[in-house]
Length: 154
Image 1 (cartoon, rainbow, N blue to C red):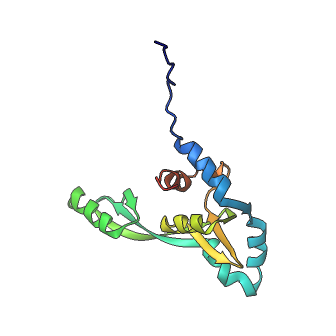
Image 2: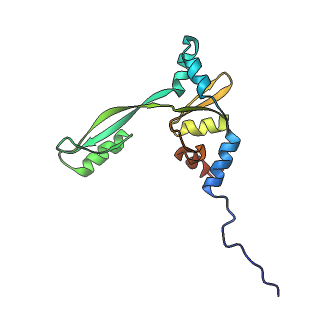
């Protein structure tokens, strides 16, 4: 009988490998300079605003001394947290202004996935443009890309 050496590591693709493949297949080209320049023109500014900046409502939870304790982006969650924390705690609505630091042409499939997760995405002149809100790291390391890479259908 012949002994067979089985691999000691999993043959499944890791999340990082899937994320890398996702970026290689679905992220096409950096468009940041083009978006910034076109946004200066009145003709295009309104259409591109969706991928330049956005405002999100954050619910800041304060203790009885007026010090912030925690925050969340869902009012129901804020109410629940205040009830759990007890008397003297309250929440206030705050606005977060979020600016895209990079712009990328992406596939329509990835644009849909990003939009489902609250990312800035728009269709412009037959491009799907993603307004990426972080910079300085590989796209495959972005939390939203890692989240999409975890999907079984990808």
